[in-house]
Each structure stands twice: as C-alpha cells, then as structure tokens.
Image 1 (tube, rainbow over the protein chains, first blue to last red):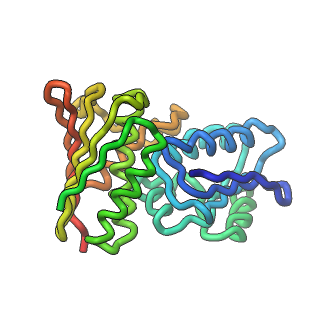
Image 2: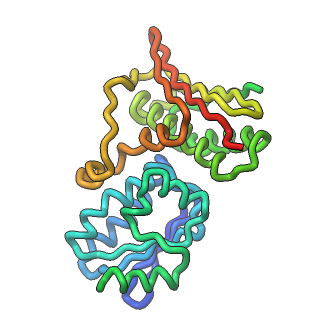
Image 3: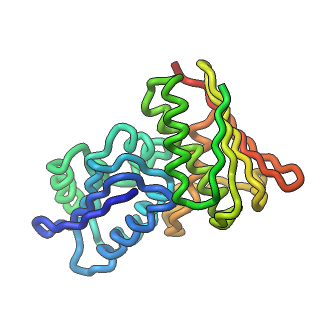
Length: 117
Length: 137
C-alpha cells in the first residue's frame, strides 16, 4: 500500500510518501512527481519520506527518471525523513550522491536555497 | 530450515513475498538493514519474473523456497515463464539510466550488490534463480 499526499508550503510543493513503493505502487509516485514537473510554476519540491516504510528499484527509478528534467526545467528537489532502512537502499547504488537527501524538513528547506544559489 | 511460498504472477503479491521473507529471517538475524536488503533482492527478482517473464499473468505462478540456518540463506525462485539470459545481461551505468529517463533497469544491479552469489538457470520449461547470502554477524 502506498499513500501519497501533495501539499504546498511557502511556494514549495511537498510530496509526502507513506507505505511501500514497489513495482506495484511506484506508478502513483510517478504520477504525483510528473504532475509537479509538468507544472511550470513548480520550482521547489520536497519529498517527505517520514512515513515511507519500504522502497524498491521501481521507486528509485522514478526519482532517477526525473533528474534530467530537474536540470532542464530548473527544478530543485530534496528528500528528507528517510529511515535507516530506506536510506540504505539509496546508498547501495550510490543514489544518495545523485539526489539531495537530508535528515529533516528544516534542513531540506535550507538545502533548497543552498541548491538554488 | 526450509520454507516455501507459491504466489500467482500479480504485482500486488510482492508484499506477501516481502512479509514472508521478513518473518522467516527474523528468527535468524536481528539486523534490520540486512533483512531489508535480502527482502529487497528477492522482491526485485520476483518483480522481474512477474512482469517480464510472466507478463503479470495471474494464471502463472512463481515458487519461492527459502533455506536458512544461522550462517546464511539460500533463496530459490522458480517459474515457467520466459527465460532470462543472465549471460547476456550487461549492467548499465547509473549515468546511462539517468540519461535514458527509464524507470527500470536497476533492480538486478541492487540484487548483485546485495547477494554473495546470483545464478540463473533454465532446464526445459523451468527457470530457476538462486540467491546466496551469508549473514554478516
């Protein structure tokens, strides 16, 4: 089961992902992210992973597939709130080096501005 | 100990596979990260078999056998779908995956990083994927 909520806060779009992102459910994360990437008004995206319990390659693949779009559309995306288990999955292939991942929401907002400058 | 689980080829059954492995491994290791890695490796193989070898046909099934002791675990995943030619598999670089904007292609990379040994074999219509892993502690 996956549970996705999109909210907006100070011009920042926040996708909160809960539950399991696997080959069966990753399409919902993809749809949520695509919706934001295709909205020209969206420049800042936070992914709140505090409720995320499991991620497989299907979920990692969703984030990876937008990396080029983020560059061309000048969108900043930062992930935060990953459990040790979930963070470990990003680390196995070194994806933590390709994406911006920080511990908490406060750091995530700071990172958005840092990335911007 | 040996444990067995048969699941029909539907993506929604992946959660059942993950829960089954987690439950069986918890009796042998307390290392949450290690358990999650092994769960992930089997999930990736099963997802590939369900989607690419059996085209999510719920009339087909895959069989998972877990052989575990205090030293480590062997997973044997069997199906009768389209054969996967592991010898012809070339691992892409992360840069290639990013550039292609593909959402797939890194599952087997994870499996190979996590497990000690990965084997695929096919005999007549039966395909077997065997994953070996020794516990770290």
